[in-house]
Amino acid sequence: MQLNTDFSAVLNQAVFQHLKAAAAELGVETYVVGGFVRDYLLGRKKEVTDIDFVCVGSGIELAKTVQKRLPNAAKISIFKTYGTAMIKFEGMALEFVGARKESYHKESRNPVVEAGTLKDDQNRRDFTVNALAVSLNESDFSTLIDPFNGLEDLKKGVLRTPLDPVVTYSDDPLRMLRAIRFATQLDFEIESNSLEAIVQEKKRMEIITKERIVDELHKIMATQQPSKGFLLLDQVGLLEDILPELTALKGIDEVEGQTHKDNFYHTLEVVDNICENTTNLWLRWAALLHDIGKAPTKKFSKTNGWTFHAHEFVGAKMVYKLFKRLKMPLNEKMKFVQKMVFMSSRPIVLAQDIVTDSAVRRLVFDAGDHVDDLLTLCEADITTKNPKRFARYHQNFKLVREKIVEVEERDRVRNFQPPVSGELIMQTFGLSPCKEIGIIKEKIKEAILEGEIPNEFEAAKLLMEKEGKALGLKKVANEK
Ligand code: ATP
Image (cartoon, rainbow, N blue to C red; front, top):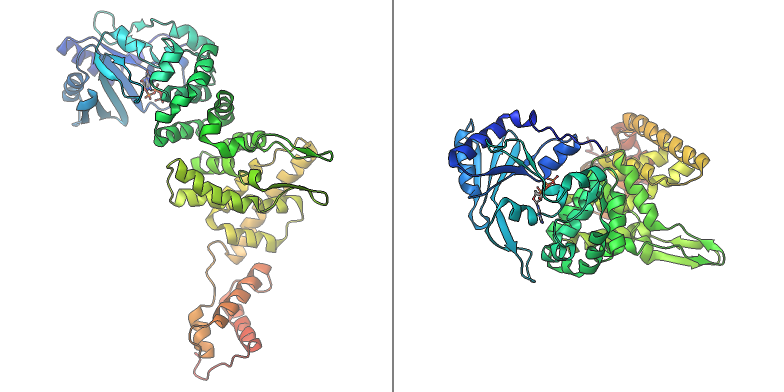
């Protein structure tokens, strides 16, 4: 891997020049460190959202001095307890910290800190590739300080801890998830001693809050190939603790020579597939969870072979429990994931069969605005290795998408509003609220979905009159 080791051009940018001047004014050694340096060296094409600065002195004082130099009254936030500060500048978060030494206690991932040297500060960083620092001092401006050979690790694509990995992970177990997340984001390997240390220390994850765990899962989900992260989580034994619903999908059973697919590996394939077509985090979660109901519903019978009866319904209920356990939002995001899981098998039938207008109308009616997302999920769900079937299913979904546009233009059943209201039914037959109104409305809806009448007022009104008559209702004289 070729690295961009020449920092001179990028350090000409205003932000670094302000830093250099502030550091000189205060007379404190200052460095840019962490993700910015790593990603610049790698030439990662990603928007810079945060830059970390470390100084041998007070990070807060440095931040205040920088702020005074920045145009347009940049906003500063000071976190006294942590001795850190943050400035918002040109859409970026500039993070400041004083170089520190850390010592940890068993019960907490928050260390006791004392002031230290740059080397002490680099020691406390999680990975050698995150411990690289570039000087912003006049004497050696733009020099890379790399005490752990992080450059070599970057070239080789390896994640290694600066100190003993067992101590590093035990001190702050969040680093285990960070290792797996960086391995997924950067497509790096975790060095073998590190992997062993994670297996050994995985119990320490107990002290990490659910919110932080989910934050890392989201970051894994946001990568191009989340399967890499989930396979690593599984390999070290963390997946079973965090998402047991997924590990329960593992394995292929065989009874009387009949097998079913391994739904764990299938799921991971579906997630990778969907990532090629959407950046919607929650749709990606839906792909991850779409089959979780299969473990508790799996059955074998002589007549039907392997079945997963109502797994979509069971899976949707499990989504709620999973979100609750992981303290994920129980709002419309969760409902969206539930809906996708619940409906995940619906379009499959269409892909295998002849696509009728009424089946498409029903799909659009039930999925509403989420029908495109649902199809994206179903297309990702095609993991058959039979090329003919693969092509046929995709072709059929293409047809479904075309029919959706056609049917929608004609019948407008997405976010369906009944063309005759309950009010009109009551007026027509002189009724007070009663079950006949619901029956008539349902008949009208069904007739529209089946294509028996168009989704229009006049046609619906005629049907209303006919159905009312069939129920023995009489039109009242003053009906308008
Ligand atoms: P990205 O912003 O792409 O997630 P990053 O490396 O900048 O990557 P941050 O979480 O912003 O990640 O952390 C900045 C730096 O702080 C890291 O590069 C690392 O040096 C250090 N760091 C962050 N969290 C930890 C931790 N839990 N243990 C040790 N060092 C850490």
